[in-house]
Image (cartoon, rainbow, N blue to C red; front, side, top):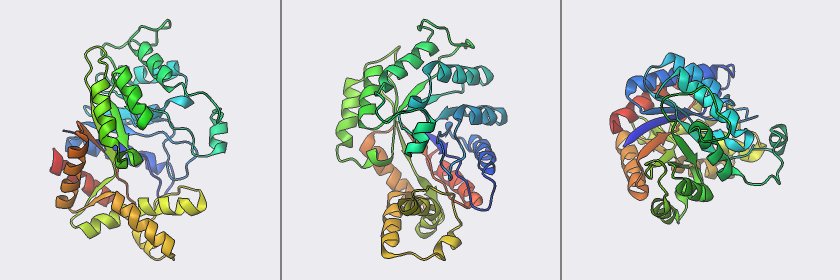
Length: 322
């Protein structure tokens, strides 16, 4: 099974936001050395805790510092972009870094109404995701009325970041699918994936391919793994009260803050949802996930405040699964 990393360029309290981008590049360099198959970056707009709003720009910087690891977007949110521009950006990346570039495309809108307005995306805009996906592919395969440039020798793999409907779109277009978040807990997930594989329409020899994206953090013990997961979980819990998904905080700072019963309950449930712990626990939970989904690839997306601990986690995960 392929093992890859997704880094969201999380900001950290007490550090410049731009440092998050440097940290992402450094993590990619380490991921290549550890033998990870791909390194993907995200697209988020107007989120205080995430510095990456332009995946193609960040991937260009990562490509300049690496030599072999595949680079991709997890993902470009297609409703925010013209398909031709997306194709051109990633063809440029492919020309700069031949044979290494993937495109993960999603349909998520901005988190808040002001962000959606800034992106010129009205709430009542029609859903054109499937058509836009097909259009991007047309530019990449040179079957569209307009020829996207620069021309490259190898086709760029497309991936669909999917929920329920997105899985159906991926099957209809013969594309790999990436699943993460709440969809992995759906009781009908097995049925959705069975339908994806059954209804998959091959395109130029493509075959069904399922990637599962899950937050993973490995430490020496289960208790230490849960502590690593706390900063990300705390940011999510706080966002439920403040409406702001903020920077990662140190564990000690979080522990010294006042929690009410609702906070404590939400933290506990959030930590339970993360695949965090010692090596044996993480391996067992990942094996259960693969058994349940038949996944072909794992896209690990864990984050924590302590960068040294995160680097150690990446190394431990690679040792477990590669």
